[in-house]
Amino acid sequence: MDHSLAKNRLLPLLMACALAFLPSRATAEADSYEYGYTAGEHPEEATPAWKMISAGDPSVRVADGKLQVGVAGGNRALFVIGTFANGVRGDIAAWDMQSGVATIEFRVRCHSTDPDFHLFRVQFTDGKKSWVVSFTSDTVNRVRLDTSEMDTYRLAAKDGVVQISSERYGLISKAHKPASDTDSQCLIFGTQEISGAPAPRDATGGWELEFIRWTTREANMEPLGPKR
Image: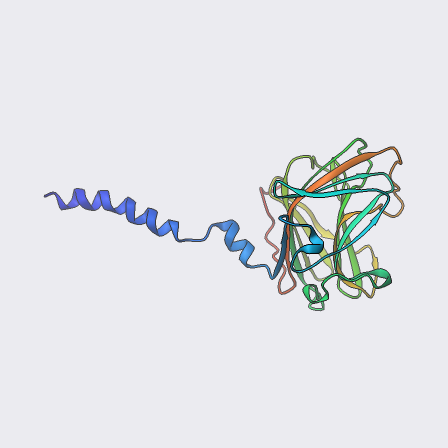
């Protein structure tokens, strides 16, 4: 028997078996987050539980593994973890950014009849400052990018600024500054008009979110996606 031939045939099988037991990059990254929401149920029914704030008549449903929200100009559809304005509270134990650092990842796509309609945002606070990252159908934080296709975004907060990146576009913003002062501690995603940029009342649109996950133990400053 040719033992070298047997070894050559066996080696690929052993390597395949070993790789099968290694976690994928996506699984390993997901495991590094303390908390998360995956769109298998309404956020208010999830663990940790979110609090929904709505105004107007937004449509909200969970289907095909996505949280699907339809909105029009002037609508509000926010989901809150922690303590927000006027005592609105989601699960307060799931957000504590006193450390001054955080990493948030989420997968979303947006669509709208009006490119000036800021129809999706992620907002978070550390008890002192508030950061807002806003989306239209063709911008991320006023940087012109197509958001109509599903993309995973990473927000990494450290030293008072936020780095924004995505799998499709790589680094989008290196040092996004806080929008305002606040004494709240919360993480928010959803629809709310941007201050100073009211939505056209005849605008319609929506967004679909597959997941959002986060940690306040560290800031992962490695940008997602290709280098820009």
